[in-house]
Length: 334
Image (spheres, rainbow, N blue to C red):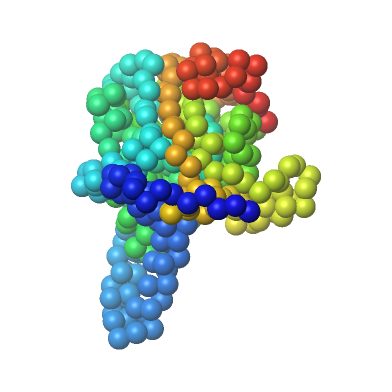
């Protein structure tokens, strides 16, 4: 394989963007394990009492990820995130006003490999606040991450909260409105479909978010992130292959998927785990008004789910030409 090296005279700003993304990759893939290792070292070392104190804190603070979290505007505004967003770059596109008197449930599509668009737009920077004043975004992620010592504090500071039913209910139950739950509908399973050019969404069987919106009267908003699947390449894993079968079994047992992805490196463009510089345009659609129904029937859930799929497809079709999607390409719902 011929290796393509990066030019020596690359501007400092682009180098800083690469370092920012490298930091994000490390945080996503290794920081939780590093924090758990640090905790074990504390327990076994001279400073064991610090680990005991943290365990007490963990016990007292256990429910915080399910009760709105503990965000830090300082962390969300770090300069490193500015360089992170500029690397791709990441853009948030508004198509309609969202009245802050209501609560909203935003369905984010597609998952991609590492959900870069969701993190960049809803956990860092001022874009969301500037476009949708009066709304506070909460990005829901797998509850297991909040079991990691120290790491949980870091991700909560960015505005991430648990994806448990209790957590979503807490966010959507705000009487004065002004809360926006962001849920990556396809979940970890969908990351296995995150190949460049893929438009396959795991959504036909996912109706829990519809029931949640009905029970709380939260307006539904489809969100499509163009470019999300273009950031990495994956080892071929078609359905029915031995690799896909292993990945799906591991995903069911562990709760998260293990896509075998690769892209570019720090000083060369041929291999590595740094994502490609591909623009991400996260388009926020118009709200689907939902009337509160504490005990929705199966038929009512199905009807609203069908309407959501219709609006999601409409959002994609209206904007695909702007972001390089061929006219004949359409979303595939599975």
